[in-house]
Length: 144
Image (cartoon, rainbow, N blue to C red):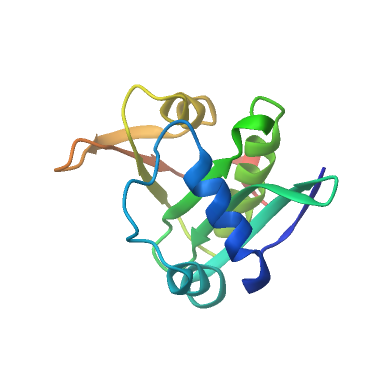
């Protein structure tokens, strides 16, 4: 497996992973290529994981707000540690960028929710649409 910075050339494959997941499925066309471009070039950064030259997972974080915009692994590559490596890479970069708190939202009672709790995230509330808001503060584990 290879992890590297995401580029515009990766957007189509990133979106294919995003719409191919089993949980937290994208049900509308609200996310466009321009959204990916903004998140990986203007407001933050993204990383992709490749296996045998094929993009199989990605993570994107917003360096202005501390939001984890996306972290998705293709179902054929789940439970291999790819998501955790992307998570740790992204979180370390965001904290190294000077942020003091990260946040994300995810559906309750999902593997994603459990994944983030296991990674040290803490429940910070419920959004108006019923998603769980999770937050993460820096720790020695993520300092660069």
